[in-house]
Image (cartoon, rainbow, N blue to C red; front, side):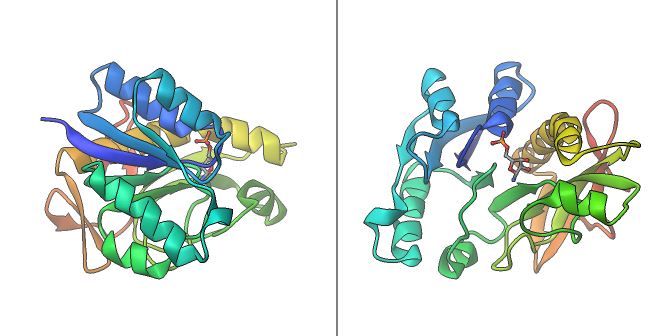
Length: 220
Ligand code: GRF
């Protein structure tokens, strides 16, 4: 039984690549129904094509409003049969009507320990704040930017002399493990969203889940 997943990506697509690799290795019981982008030249689209995954690029400039763009995009997502949408480096803010329709069925990966550092430049902001720890979060998407309930987080220690780029590079492999684990848990029916809370194996979680060394989610 494979779970149908659509991915939205605006750029490089390393998180998409991690999902494809895990699927191909038999570690992720998903079918990728669509990879869609707001950027026709996104490397993520080329990678999807190379793997025989249906792709779609829509140009926001050809739509009268954000709502019309999102309606067209998500009509395609729905038509692909996806039951889960993964925002993997998707850099456009979503219309609230769309997020309302996909509550509990759309997740985002964000490179910070939410609720810290919503939005951009998370690595630099964590450094500037003098944090001793940094990380990534996967959360259910709500109308609020980077604001929905957090499913799980991966943490890394800060090192002396760290730069934003060094942090980003060190965090990225952890992001990949985290996203694969979260998509897998949703595909297997272990993680749900209910009334703005995350349920793990039927119980509300008091804090974001963590990753164990084998890449499985565990209660914090
Ligand atoms: C990742 O750092 C992700 O957390 C953020 O955007 C970046 C996308 O990277 N939302 P990639 O396109 O998946 O390589």
